[in-house]
Amino acid sequence: MLVDTHCHILPGIDDGSPNIATSTRMLEMERELGIEKIMLTPHFYLSEEKTIDHFLEKRAGAIEQFAPVAAQLGLEVKYGAEVLYTKSLADLDLTKLCIGDTGYMLIELPYQRLTSNFINEFRSFVGGLSPDIRLILAHAERYLNYTDEDSIYEIMDSDMIVQLNSGDFKMFYKHSKFMYDLLRRNLAHLLGTDCHNTTSRPPNIDVAEKAISKKISPRCFSKLNHNAEKVFEGRSL
Ligand SMILES: [Fe+2]
Image (tube, rainbow, N blue to C red):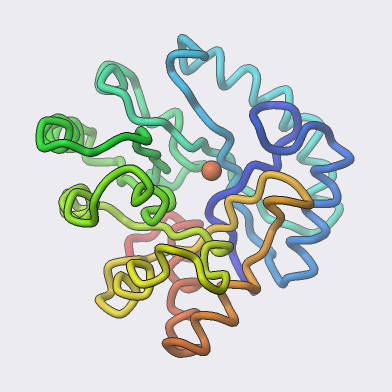
């Protein structure tokens, strides 16, 4: 049984699934891959939403259509968000954006060079968070398009749980070395599909399963999934 920790399957809420028909197909695809538990993490951009309550109202509308389909397919789901970091998050009650009742919140960094000023600002944000919240850094490998490895390591140092995208384990991905280094050093903890649709960004946990089992070990893949189960249940890793 597998767990997806990051996806955009809720219909009509972000740049993920546009409608319930696509969401249904995506859920079927997840099911075919052996995924039985899913954390739904639509994008939360404070600059667009203005308030968390506005986002939650919108999300509730999507859940109304989505929940019966997920239940029919026998999937267990929890609702959260993929929260884009911005300084003003510090003024908000972020427990509302955590994944279900778990206390885990998925956070995405801005796509820019992560300067030492930014890193300091981020660290003080993390330091000021309620002790009930634990941050999961979304797809650590993707920031390498904008910044250097050291800056990502520094961000990870602030007690972050680190998630990697399963599709980025495809052959010849330019940041593979970084991803395998993290796994070998036990610095990456979770896999997520970050699926947005059924075509260009589909559910594809099998890509990671094959690559990690071959390059590291099947046990490493199982460990990542075991961590995801713990997160889903709100237990600590
Ligand atoms: Fe995402």
